[in-house]
Length: 219
Image 1 (tube, helix red, strand yellow):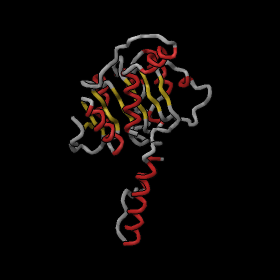
Image 2: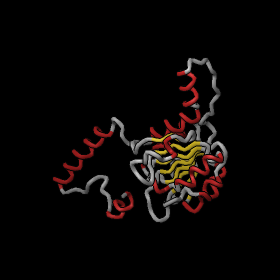
Image 3: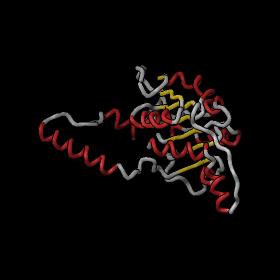
Image 4: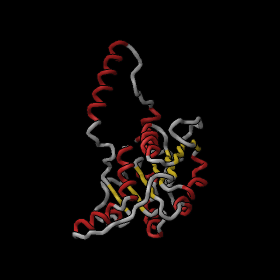
């Protein structure tokens, strides 16, 4: 999923759609692009996915702010902030990545008020849950240019309706809830299963065991 986030952001910054259109038209058209170095990324949700994005983006020279409940510093972030701090972070954020679970506090956290604070040229990425985003508010904000582009892997209603304006909006990159469908999943899952089988037979605590609250939050 972290790789997916980097792909989506890089495609926007590198002006991928324009380059592909020029290639299809046989046009020798040179295009300037934006660099990641020096951009400021705000990652809402700083668990395994958020930290994975942070490691990759930081290698490109991005400034990383992780937003989570645990206030402890993290070596892969330049700053750790609380959810209440998000409105103050948005005016300086170039890339806003949503990778948080859906809770009463995070539902529609990306709403009209939040979009009103985002800077022109900024990018929104949602790989968390669809209802993190107020979709009508996002469409209105995209038409105003802040954010300038949205990379969306999840939606409030899935599958996305055939008549949804997201399909054809020029400032939207969308995928069908597939950001985690990498070729590396099966081998990693096999390793975890075998280790947990060993632990179960030995009466040891299992790895990656989710609590009931965590399961509900992710559902």
